[in-house]
Every structure is written in structure tokens, then in C-alpha cells.
Image 1 (spheres, rainbow, N blue to C red):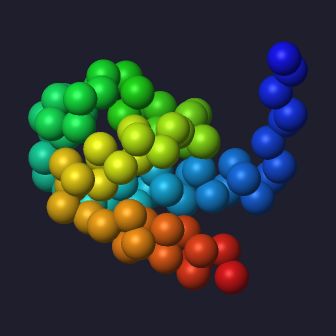
Image 2: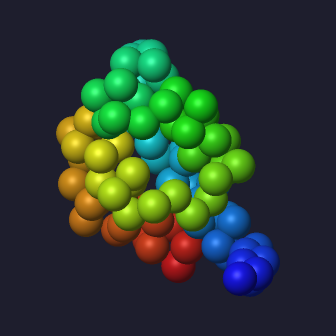
Length: 83
């Protein structure tokens, strides 16, 4: 199965998500947050830098929990910034 290429808007949304997560992480280390979320630091790095613009739902949910964010906050911030 061939994956459809992402649109520029989808890539931008992924970059926005990465920025939001990076800002929420603040001074905490990438390794610390990744461990709490149960993902690798490399996965978190890819999400934060926009190299993984469409992370899995449960990955985003785990990161939101580790950072004390609600999924509504993340989704709302991504939608509002796009409008």
C-alpha cells in the first residue's frame, strides 16, 4: 500500500504540533518526557522537529498526558493556528 503524500497544510499542522509540544516541555529534557510517555527520545525529536508530522493518536495522547495537556488543548491550538 502506497501512502498518499502529505499536503503542505498537513505538514504545517505537524510542525505546529511539534512546536506546541516543545513549548509545553519547557526546560524538561526530551529523554524525561519520552520515558514518561513510553516512547523513544528519537520519536519525540522527530515529532518536535516536524519530521514525523502525523504521529499516531496514542503517541500524541501519551505525550499530552506526560506534559499535562488535554487533547482538546492540543487540537484546539492546532486548529486555531490554522484558521
